Every structure is written in structure tokens, then in C-alpha cells.
Length: 166
Image (cartoon, rainbow, N blue to C red):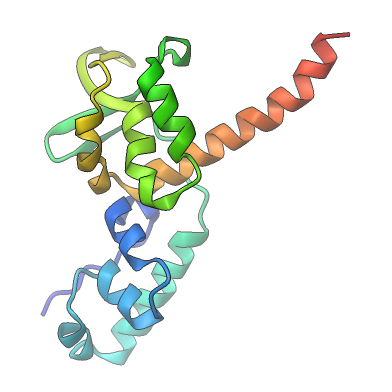
């Protein structure tokens, strides 16, 4: 049996991360390795230990902010100008930013399929709430880096706004 061990958050999908929450360690490892419990029982202990080590390390990493990524053959990009976010997308992003079960809805509000690109510049399709389920297959790094991006943005704004209002 061939076992593929994820070594970073880019190797773990949002779906796997959500499914693994609040599960015992062995169930989590099975989910991240895409194995059933029966298949995991056949894995040598040394491979299990290595997988646990790599997955634990991946969960501690703080990935760089992801602007573009692929799911299958579809390339997604973060909205190039957040000032242009649609009201429905804004509401979904705001309502689902902190709830893990709605993480795919949060990502769908901020990331869209790219319709045109030239070098580092691109334009994205309009907001479509029905597309959210496809974002369950996004790399976990997209979700965590986006949360960190908005956390840092909020922290920076908290510093600069009082200074600029004087």
C-alpha cells in the first residue's frame, strides 16, 4: 500500500481539516492520509509516527498569504480589490469568518475563478454562492493564510486609524 503523507497545509484540503476536527488522533491521521481505519491499521508504526510528526508540523506552520491557487483545472484568485466586493459576498465573508463549518463559504466570498490573467494581474468571475461547496477542496493553507491576512490587517488598522484621526 502506498501512503502519501502531507508535509504542509498545502497538502491538506479544507474538507479534511473540517472532518478531522474533534476526532481522536488515529481518526485524524486516517483522514489526512486518505485511508480507512482498516487501512491505517495495516500501516507500519514507523510510517504512522512519521505521518504524525509531519502533520503536526504542518498544522503549526504559518503559510504565506495565498493570492491564487488551483482546484483541479480551475484557478482561483483572491478578489483583486476588496473595495469592489459584492454585498452578498461581504455578508458571507463576515458571517462565516470564524466558524469552521462555514470556512468554504468564507473562502468562496473572497476567492473566485479567474476569468482573465496577464502576468501577475487577473480578473475574477462574479460572486456565486452556489460555488461554495467546491472550495471544500481548497488547500488548508489558503484558509489559514487568509485568516492571518485579515487578522494582521485588523491589527494594523487598529494602530494607524487613531494616528490618522489626530
